[in-house]
Length: 514
Length: 81
Image (cartoon, each protein chain N blue to C red):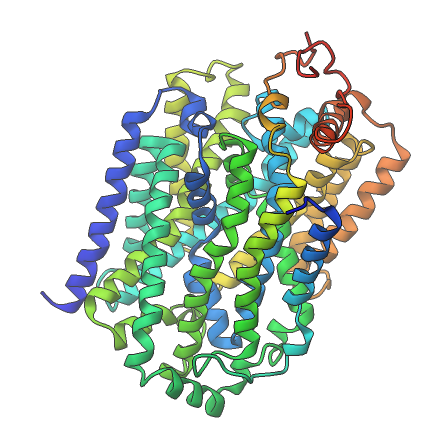
């Protein structure tokens, strides 16, 4: 068997494995919408960890970030791994846990429901829906682009770009439509283990093949010392570090797929334990990925554009046995698909619950029809993404930054929803519209807010929200149900051991105050 | 070990300062394992330290026992019984 055929066989084996996992999870499906989209809110620590990590680590982790490290050096690790190892767990506490509490308390299953209810405004829900869908679809397309590039690159064009994109689209469609949320979480566990195993194995085997770590160090110091110095490039400078960490952090909890995964947790304790373990996931992924890319800068110099994004695959093909190159492709597909499946399912969830169910006046809820409609939406979203992926695009790092900037628009309203009694419908709408207009204008350079405009956009949006909230009437009942409930809950937790218990407003007589 | 909020916040602040290690931005030496510059291995250290710091922070801030009771489903019309 030739090297390429062996590599493709490894990939085919991986595809078959995830489809089988999807099929097995189909047998566990209870044929209702809550189970299909939220796995009946049953995730434990391990499943939530794999589901959230797999969803967060997209093609960006194996193509975009290494491509950036190949060009700009080790500073990329600090931006995408170290900084986020602190901010992401904090976000799981300050936002994720509270979202879970509200979801459990009031039965929300989508972010749109939560926003619309907090601000007593279907219009706010519609705007959140539009923003989430508009920026998730480009991110789905990133996966399809990455798949097409990887398969066509690995076979020197024997498998054309469109066929690679189509293959992954079909496989993801098969297992997501079969098992819904449970299928995506179980396959995410397989996928995370596959790509971590590959990256760690490659990071151990590559240095000896390139003359050893000491020799690599000498070559890097002589030929590319800039890549070893964090502030040698403007893209990894301290200000870029702050902007990039903010951009990723603000967007993360606004991804519908992450938001919904918080709702699928069995308890708040599960989210807490997952948050503590989370930095290890980043360490085991980004340290080997960034190291391989930096080594690639001296081993395979001269790659540019999408070629630089492909540096890990190129290293494997040139210096490693064919089976490991095939393993690299499988790992890449694992990363791509672990994000794509969650995004596609989340979009299908939003379309089914927030659009179809409303249009059909609740007839989609709770029965097999809901699952059927959800499956159809999975197919529609994937088909649209595949069509868009056929149009030539920018590098994956750029597309990711565009999507992250857009998701950041929801962040100030999300924080206000959880923490501010004063924020009302008018302020939320003014903020969302301001951000939605500014983000694309700034990103495409029509408005000059710097190279990473997420922080300025969020700042302007926040000022607008505060100004509008200060001049319009608050919504005390809705604020009580959200902010009052959360404050009382945490006050109770704090005082339990040392003082009298505090009963939340509106909860007297429920038995919970005892 | 005491559940101390000031200690938890101090550890978090120290971790944030360590992550934004301005003193390492221009440096390459000392290299670890022959090739890894200080700007990378320091950040790796920060990532590893994030685990125990978060564990302590959440042990202090994140109540263990409120979730289940207080997240009991509310009546559909939003009014309490």
